[in-house]
Image (cartoon, rainbow, N blue to C red; front, side, top):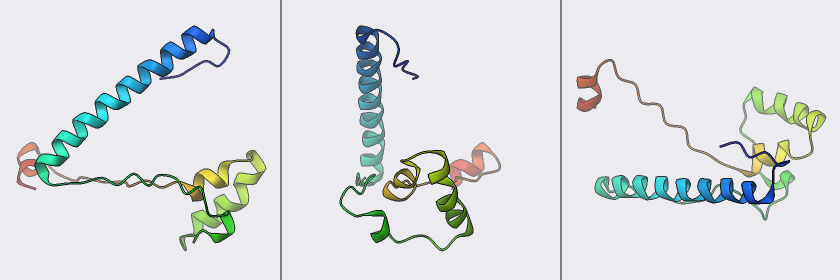
Length: 102
């Protein structure tokens, strides 16, 4: 949901409130499904205490390229890149029945 920072305070607050409710609802739905499957979640999306020099870097070429590039285009790119985390899941299937089987 894009929020235009040049808009009125009332509109910005409305958008933030809407997004907050949407996010809460989505998390509740995910938690309900996860609970049925015996899956838990741990929210560790940001590392505020370590300095960038203290954070281990994955030994991949793209990280070296991005580490040199990010400071040229902004001041917080390296923080976003190294102080946040995510999990990517790829689910491969060839048909609906294959998906159900897996």
